[in-house]
Every structure is written in C-alpha cells, then in structure tokens.
Image 1: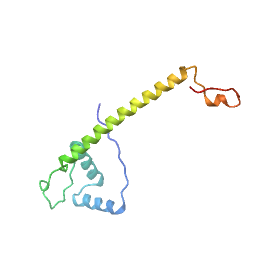
Image 2 (image 1 turned 30 degrees about the vertical axis):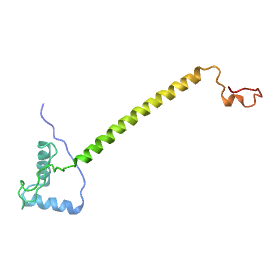
Image 3 (image 1 turned 180 degrees about the vertical axis):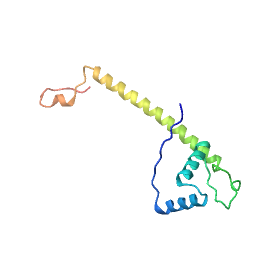
Image 4 (image 1 turned 90 degrees about the vertical axis):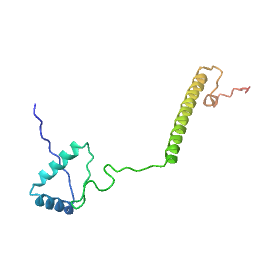
Length: 128
C-alpha cells in the first residue's frame, strides 16, 4: 500500500507570507515546496529543527536543542517539594478513609439521633 499525501493548511499574517514568498523566489521554488522541505526536515529530525540565518554557520553557538544548567539546590528543593506533595497526598487519602469509616459507623449505629428528626418531636433526650 502506498503512502497517501495529506494537506496541511494554516494562516500567517501578510508580512510573514511575503517573507516566505521571497524565500521561495530566492530558491526558485514554490511555496508548497518550501513547506514540504521544512516538514520533511522536521519529521526527519523528530521535531528538533534549528533555523540558522544564512550568514551564520550551523555549528556556531551552543547547539540544538538549547540546554540550561540548573543549580543543584534548585533540583534538591524541587525533589523535596515533590516528596512533601506525595506525603500530603498520602495524608489526604488516609483522612478520606477515616471519614468514610466514621460515616459508616454513624450509619450503622442505632443510637445516633439526627437533629432533623428532633424537630417537632417534643421528646426529651439525654446526652451522655
């Protein structure tokens, strides 16, 4: 089975369109060919394509994708916060289980008198 071509469409402002048209004319290509080449390059490099101006060598600079050094203290603080968040999630789950247990106990306890049931009853009850 052969590959079937699909159409991609998107909108750009007039300035970008004119710039793209000029690029296509400089390279003696159609706009469609410019986009096809770009998409093919993007797919071939798994989405990591670095656009380099014509007057700059592609090997200049820090490389692509750019990397950033992060201080160890930032990483340690991030890990500490993740551990604390995990601990808080565990506590929340424990509290939810306890609330469910208390609700279940209250539903099963025959001596529980609900305040709504007392309205207009006139009966006397003793707390104890």
